Length: 463
Image 1 (cartoon, rainbow, N blue to C red):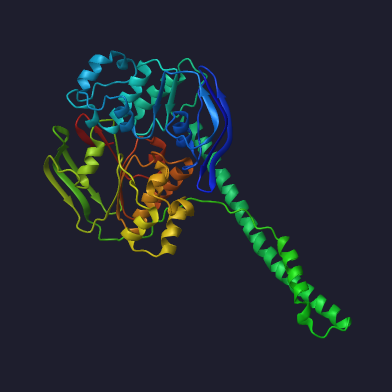
Image 2 (cartoon, one colour; image 1 turned 90 degrees about the horizontal axis):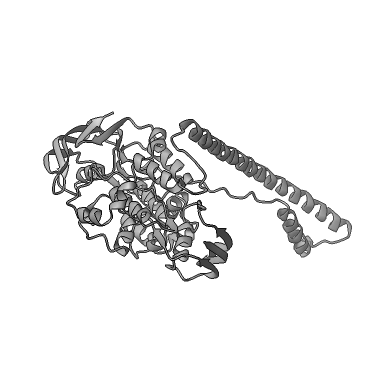
């Protein structure tokens, strides 16, 4: 079905990948993993003829191919279905009911006005209803709720050689994650030992240099040389020879989001909603009463389309409250990571940080490098960053802006494993308030959340 031979993709002076070759046979599935910015999405774009700047070749023996990138709106636009009334779409595509439950969808909405999770469900159901030969799915679980993820897994596994990995097996999951984390800790200890060994080696080198220098000076004097400086070239040569024997340990990259820049204020409600109804053309959640104090970590869960993202947008006053009262503390500084938005545009990443924060070059580079953004990409336009790298950059931006209330809508979308682990630590250590929406149950459990609310049947309930 797919044959790839010696693909090579360059980014500036570096390679995203080179000599990449593989075959994919009929009814086989291939999982592609890697760090943010390592070229996973770029490979998909090449195989779907959206990126022609590469060397090597590939051959795909099928024309019934679908490609869903990380922006679901692009897929809907390409299929010419974004402006169709949802009820009309269902009439034309009755097969989609086999794949997902659409009972809570508003059938009177145009598709482009559905939530991102609903759009993703619709797009995946549409693809599988067409009996495709090949499907390229780039981060397909982004925005999907728990039940939808399970349905997607079943559809992928059906009649394929897909390796069964069931995320509901908590013990197995935690066992694997603990092994992974233990390996990371072991690696850190080894690197630290290597660093200390290197420091001791340098001390040894310096002592050896002094001994060699004393020996050479004594030797020169015995041979009758009075002007020792005339032999400085020999000393320098010997110095270089000894230094080359002290190997420098490989530097280990560790993602870190800083949490110390938080403006603190007294312990009173920073956010309060009373008798609140939220929504757009209709009420999605009604009779909301919630108080959030400074330092609270709150999670909101629920199925796609129930109104979770709408609630966050109401809290940040991006959209007005439908009815009722909402009070936001005057000292609140929001850091807003919205599900359908990240850093975008043609602006240079460094220039954006410089303009918005006013910090020194050293501080900006330090924060972004610790977030996993290379120096080369810091100097590039934002559009050249992967979605995961943009999320990392935005979290660093929040740190520099002294944000004290984080609004995180599906923050693990696009992040690699290292990024998710670092985000967990970021949320746990953050001194301010956190209000987040996530369908990643393990992420929620690891973030030490204080309270979890569920949006269901138009109600916000503490669970």
